[in-house]
Image 1 (cartoon, rainbow, N blue to C red):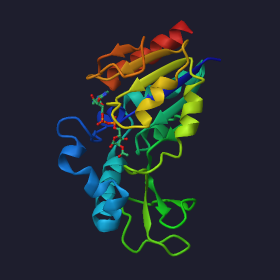
Image 2 (image 1 turned 120 degrees about the vertical axis):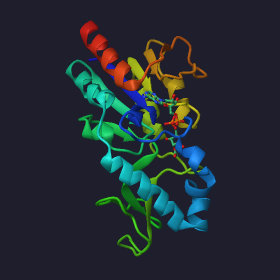
Image 3 (image 1 turned 120 degrees about the horizontal axis):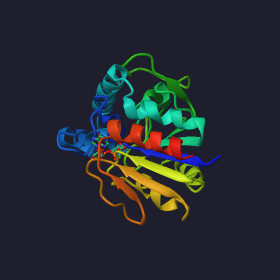
Image 4 (image 1 turned 45 degrees about the vertical axis):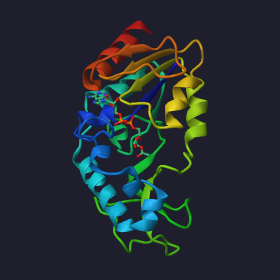
Length: 229
Ligand code: OAD
């Protein structure tokens, strides 16, 4: 079976009502990255950081998977499928995708501040001051912040290097190392980029650009790939 690797960013969840980061009106117009999404921000004012991610969690809990998320698991009928996402929401999982690798963490989980192996599910929307791990330290959101390592990157590269078809959806490809993933596709891989404002990524020639919203373009591409296989 051929392998399809789906690599997503915030744009795949935009039609579910979850804010993107760099579009006009996006999150990074409303907040400064250095105030809410860095280890320094946590040290300076961890309650502000908790509040920022509590708001993100509320938004995710209200959201439902859209047509793009829902069409991806249909590929399982004829392909091996991996989803690699920069998103912290769980909409791929709720749409039925298996094998979802989160490069930038998961909003519905918390993590110990003294032992990164201690990861917990969060019930509801709120992670509070005083919520502690079993070793007694304050819990933080299970998110990769700017300036932190991306622990899942090596696994993502290994998966991408085996792709026969790569579908990149709704990402500005501005944040590294994630943005570099497309440079690891093998020469024979068919690569698609679905984004209404798609720019040709560096290091990737032959990429097929589909300038459309994920909710239209992903189901159409999935249908075409299934028909042609
Ligand atoms: P961005 O906000 O940088 O880019 C979102 C992309 O989605 C843009 O290229 C939009 O054109 C596109 N888009 C908007 N609506 C769309 C739709 N309906 N269908 C398809 N595409 C659409 O978000 P990311 O590239 O995901 O990291 O950002 C990467 C990382 O930067 C995030 O994971 C996050 C952020 O800061 C961390 O917080 C560590």
